[in-house]
Length: 346
Image (tube, rainbow, N blue to C red; front, side, top):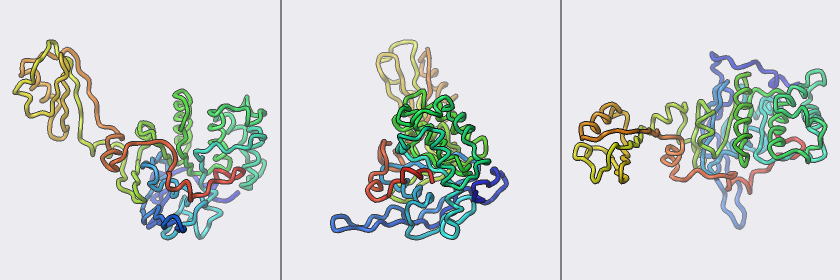
């Protein structure tokens, strides 16, 4: 088995990131009908070992191109990239063994059982029979009782879980999940979130792309926003949320109110008749306690209140100027090849 696949668990003191790209660029050649397309414009990015790292951006931002370069499915135009310290150009076989990719498409062979599929995939990676973890993976994705059923009989959620197991047969230290919960129901989404957390706790570095910003906020400790082939923001999730510096308080008043009191004129306040008052403020400039004191000093009675802080959707809109959407990167889908069905996740 290639040495990258048996890489040690992440060491918090290890300065070498799980994934490092420098000056990474990709320009797709044009045609008679379409001009050349610059998908990546010399991006720099470090993904720390042991992290759950979110890669967010609108359709056509360059996310899929970046993933496909790391997986060896697309040739870069310029720059360098390494996975677990292994350069993808100098040691392509070892670098590909260090990464597992779960694509958005459910590309499993309909006539293989889950056990056969995992055994076959392990064989493609050269994993010796005695080192295979097929039964462990089936249990981890809750498919032990379906191990002998043809894949075509599995539900969409089961097949998605099988894709995760398929990407892990060679025990890669880095796992890429491309829209893992696209089109799944709430219960299955929660199950997949639990599996992602379990994999991460076991030492696997997870790179997650998703259009569900709530999902990224829930799972990721670091996030990079990419737009038009460039990284426009990269930081911890906590730091990115603090950057917004906006908060909203909804106050249910004890009595009806016709107009805003003069004492609240300094705030971005909105009255929703008859008894609802919405106040927006910047926590860095105004303390919550002072705001409440001003409301009371204006002669208003607070019957109830709720607060709402800025989330990743607000930051997404501010950075990209585009609404969060669903589906794959549109500009890349025509030009980036899809993984062959037998070797997806490579």
